Image (cartoon, rainbow, N blue to C red; front, side, top):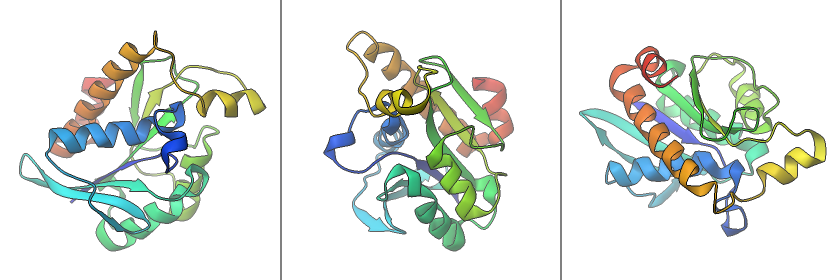
Length: 185
């Protein structure tokens, strides 16, 4: 089973913020795969289904972003002991708006949600898909930036990035992380 986790903050206050782009990707993937987030499990909203014959579990943690690892660790413990089957989708303020990057592992790069996942899993050796939300600002300005919404002028680039990221996640499910890296990086 492949598990795709979109990181974000729960609730309407954070909907469509830069920090919730991970949720947007798994929502798009759920629509494409005709799956619905109808139940709560592992401290998250979950959707289960198939993607070209592969079992897939989509996850949106119900914790705040900075504690996402708690939910991810629970689902990994019960459903994916092999971390190569897990893909974490996350915003990245240090990537230009619209750019995506897939990696097999690596540091949190200052992202507290990704840092939480690494902390709870006790390893950084799992695939992640980073989505560029622009910015490269630091400190309090960074917090305001990632908790802010995209401008109407940015929205077309964001929608194209989300669609491309959903395609990359599908490639991860069907062909693996190396193939997804080769095609989408």
